[in-house]
Amino acid sequence: DIQMTQSPSSLSASVGDRVSITCQASQDISTNLNWCQQKPGKAPKLLIYGASNLETGVPSRFSGSGSGTHFTFTISSLQPEDIATYYCQQYDNLPLTFGGGTKVEIK
Amino acid sequence: HEQLVQSGAEVKKPGASVKVSCKTSGYTFTAYYMHWVRQAPGQGLEWMGIINPNSGSTTYAQKFQGRVTMTRDTSTSTVYMELNSLRSEDTAVFYCARPMAVAGTFAFDIWGQGTMVTVSS
Image (cartoon, rainbow over all chains, first blue to last red; front, top):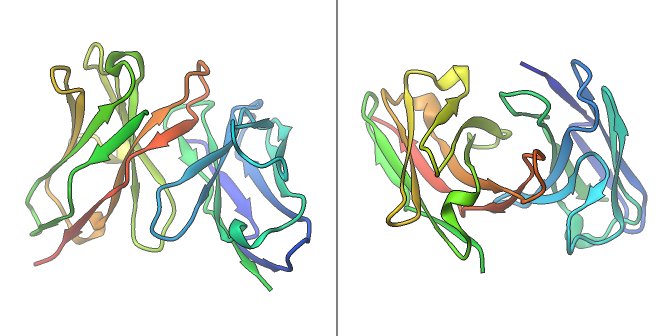
């Protein structure tokens, strides 16, 4: 199985800050990576697919980059409504696997 | 309006089985595979498997092989996930999730609301 290592596991930042999360795959997964956001008690929501493609309707302050084994998810200007846990997910091979999650809080 | 509506919360004893339903609406049922994802309390997301609603064929994560069965009913546009031999570690929220139309992305743009399954004696 492909292991997805996400860091940090949590972060605290101020409104307006630039926030970045990294995801490292245990093997080359090309750009076969998605990012989702999960708020407490809710189902996850897709934000980025194919490493860098913004899902329809998702604010442009969210972005993704990377290929191979190293990926980055960025919120360019953190907003109060962005408080959530973010997960990366690889789809290069079954089983699909997720990173451990990054909990984002407001400082 | 594309939607997945799951069955309600369940409480089961260890060793029992649970069957969770996921009723789809607003799109062609047979056109999209369906996945199931598990999330234990306070934990991350774990992929369980996939069903092709057209053929009924399935692929399960090895961790759940032998204990999980995914089925579908095309007459009601509903998929089911049954998990057997439940243990306390199976206490979790179970989600059905449908991938987006962009081929091969396995990106879940539609999720069910989740079904909480509690396993307790």
